[in-house]
Image (cartoon, rainbow over all chains, first blue to last red; front, side, top):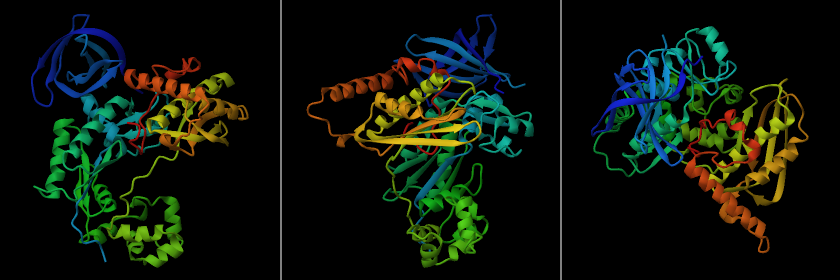
Length: 87
Length: 404
């Protein structure tokens, strides 16, 4: 069955805002327990509305687990909302 | 004999769409057998499987627990509709950039009609370009099949020839040789029931189907104009360039537990009525009939319906009628469904000159729909359905893009 962990953890993020098809690229984030996660690939980014607020949902991986990060475009915050590994 | 027109119809079909999107968004799932399901229970049915799972015998519609016995490593992933809608919109944007005549047949397949469009490249080149753009603009794990032909039917047939990631052209020059490689049920629109009907007149292969004359198909096999349509369709003439109007709107739900009380089931029915009403109004339709059905635990089917003389469209009216009908329903309910039929356009609705209540109801329903559209599905709903949203979730509709 599904092995995802559902979270709502605010994280500190290093991201690059540039141009092209994917102008926002999260690079690495630090979790509340201090662990740093280097993002090796962005799987998919899709926008979604939460009420009037726009959230950008990034499904990413560090090569050992998949993570879902949500960027709140109004509050400018990043949250880790899912974590899954399939080992 | 066959349609000799140039091949200007392109059919684009995402391969195992939901599973591919999951593998795209979660790179750790790539290369692994995954099954996309709608609910986190073992009795749930698989709605899409990745190619890795399909190659091990996992089929769509199979119960997850049966598939897991077949393939213990199978990973279940719950469907994520916002993600699929996003990819659908990306695919639509790519297709729209080639022609103004694009029709999406479902969430994962679309048709581009290049008639009247000045072509800078060949159709095959455009097909490969679409595949490349899909990988660049959505993700490297996304693959699609492209079929090119002089008609929608031949283009779809071509798109199904080499899965995954194929590109084929079927036209007058090769359609016969393509039919030679197919079974009757490989033809779009021919399922087991139609196969039996064709077998009854000694048509066992697509080639025999192709070689049957129009009169036999019309008078003997189909006993309707469908026979002529099939005669022309198989030869590459366009007969499927039609849009159908919405005739019914419905929704069903398999109960999450067996021992729910009548009131709990009625609340879920109310939720379904709200969902159906919202969908119906989003299509600018009003209804005159409500139909409900029950499937019991011992697989018995019960249904009833009621027609009204005056059209209506509010959730309250739909629910009132459905609840009255539900009073007569048998026990041991496993699945419940509601459907509105006899739909007409809302513009044709006659409002009584002396009935302020109807006008007030129209305004209220319109305001609630506006709020829900702006702030999200079910921001405002009836108090009776407060707890039901956790069970009855909005899922991706198959076969139609009306509600995307």
